[in-house]
Every structure is written in C-alpha cells, then in structure tokens.
Length: 154
Image (tube, rainbow, N blue to C red; front, side, top):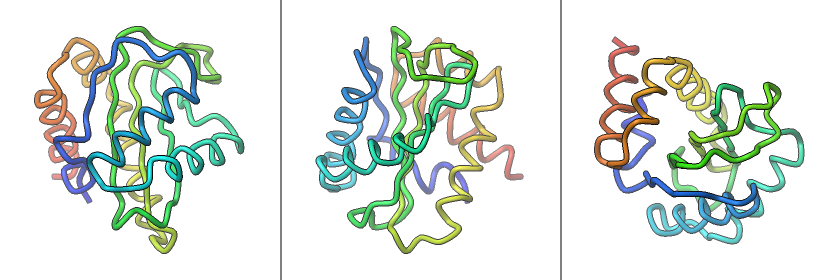
C-alpha cells in the first residue's frame, strides 16, 4: 500500500486557522463529501466518536484522526496543513498543524490499520514535515507525501 492509493490530489487543503477540533472535523467532513462523496455529517459524527476514545494527535504537531464509516468505498485519506497550529490535546502538548485523516469502510479489516501505520511512518520523517510546513501548494504537498511514501516502500 502506498499513500498515492489512499490520498487523492483533490483531498489536500491548506487552511489559515481552525478554532477547535469540532470545526476541524466539520472541515474534514465537507472535504470528504466533496472528494469522496461521503456524508459530511456522518463523517463528522464518526470522527467525534473516535476522538472521544482518546486524542488522535501523535505528537510533533501531527494528528491522525481516523474512523470507520459505511460511506467509505475504500480506505481513503484527507490532508490538511493548518497555517496557525491548533490545540489538539496532544501528549507532547504541541499544537497541531499537519492533519492526515483516514476513513475506511466498516468491513475494511486490517487495511485500515495498514493505512494508519503507513501514514504514521511517513509523517515520522522530520525532514518531510519541515517541507510540508513550508509549502502552500496542494499539488506540491500531494507530490511530497506520495513520493516520500513510494521511496520508503521501495
């Protein structure tokens, strides 16, 4: 599995600021609806439900919100770069500015976990994160994420 198989080029946004997790999830729900034709409200509900189990911030300014949702046709992702980092209840107390959300059908089995592991490994690269934070072009962000993933898979 590679990021290029789960992240559509249209699924990337750069936003100036987001005031809360709920607002972030609404933004992700709207983007999931636009790109993957998933129900925005069910997407938000699923993200809030998962977040209720514990924060999905993984530290170093990165959050990986994820949920299983019947609307998802396959494992798919969304990427947001937030220009003004936001509080996300991260264990390291650092505000989040890189968000990679993952969605999977309820029947996805281990594919969901494989995708989560792939994204986590990819975003553990501090050089990549520095480059992502320095760029505002969604096409370039997509290229960076998918090239980095492909080189690690080789």
